[in-house]
Length: 165
Image (cartoon, rainbow, N blue to C red):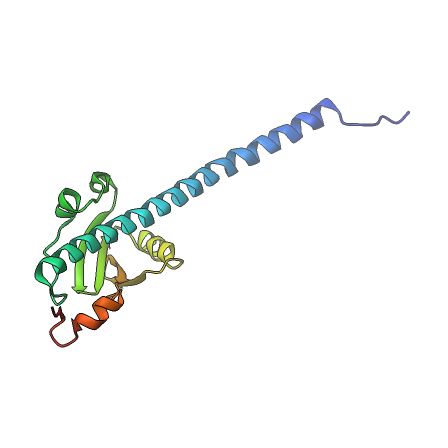
């Protein structure tokens, strides 16, 4: 007489194989989830740094009346005076904000490895930021609008980069 179904041994063998496969897949999925979370945190932090840099520049321009200069900034000054969250200082990346021109803001991120550098570059390919690499540093670049209203357009002197009254 022929038996139908699975034996206890075959069921246990299938269970052991399934458990082994899960034991290999779960850590990889967890690492992937951590990388996605890290990437989001990096993009949000760079957004925050650029927002603070813009606040600092606009405040400087409103005082001077000209957009041909930029304020001296550091990460600490952005935290203390321009609404950058203090948690930025506790992150695993080193951020260095700077102004390349009054209209081009740069956040430089020093990377320890080429793999990290590539991860940062790929993270920003789907954003409106530009990226460039210089040695072990990735520069994230934001091109900022100079003239944002009709009033500014009418009163802006392109030669002096100042607003005329």
